Length: 268
Ligand SMILES: Nc1ncnc2c1ncn2[C@@H]1O[C@H](COP(=O)(O)OP(=O)(O)OP(=O)(O)O)[C@@H](O)[C@H]1O
Ligand SMILES: [Mg+2]
Image (cartoon, rainbow, N blue to C red; front, top):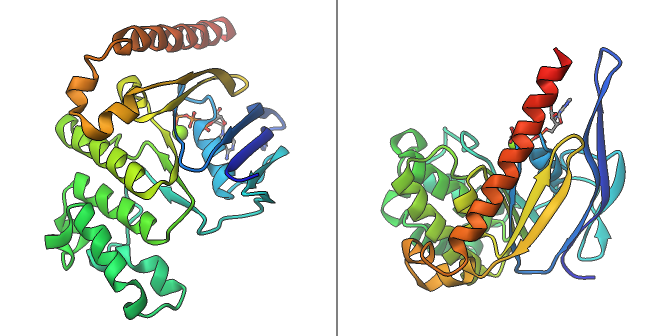
């Protein structure tokens, strides 16, 4: 089957003191090629763990990840990761960072040059290709991270809070860029966020996870990501259903947080 299948994944971390944490339990879902799914949930519900398993950084205790029909056994260029921040190569300039993947594959510049320059242009970095990473703002650094990921031409892009460290205005611009790149490239994307608004705007599918053990709580199919490809994101927030869905999800996550706090209090 084409696409990404998360098949009955459970993950238990055994701790040195003999106890264990059930970070995920029986998580299953399938993403068709080109789908964009955002993931929300309270802190500790296993979002990063799930992404790390899909990336192949972690082996699940149970279940498997299948990508276009084959079983995932480790990291691969078919599944690219964009981290929250700080994962760029500080000793390379912008173009050096973006071309890192193709260069590591041993390809020469005649092969990757045009594509890398195109990616620098679409991410608005065309005038900054010779700059050092430390000379860039946080938003620009995240654009480098996105362009570097796309230069590997992955089938799936995994993003863990990619815009979480940005100021509100830069974040909004980056949200527009993510939608634009999604439509242009047809990539499958999983994007973890703590922002309900961001999850609504960017996820044509939105997954709400619940904690202890980490599991799927509810899934939504939403029209807002498609709307946002051609419209101002602020207009999309006025669209019918946006506010009601936001309130519903906020309350859902609020209730989960309350329950966690309650349980923590009980344990004292
Ligand atoms: N390597 C590890 N060893 C032990 N426990 C771990 C490990 N990684 C994660 N956990 C535990 O697994 C659970 C899920 O963690 P995870 O980082 O996936 O949550 P998250 O949903 O990404 O949270 P946040 O929103 O805070 O980033 C937590 O209880 C965490 O303490
Ligand atoms: Mg996390």
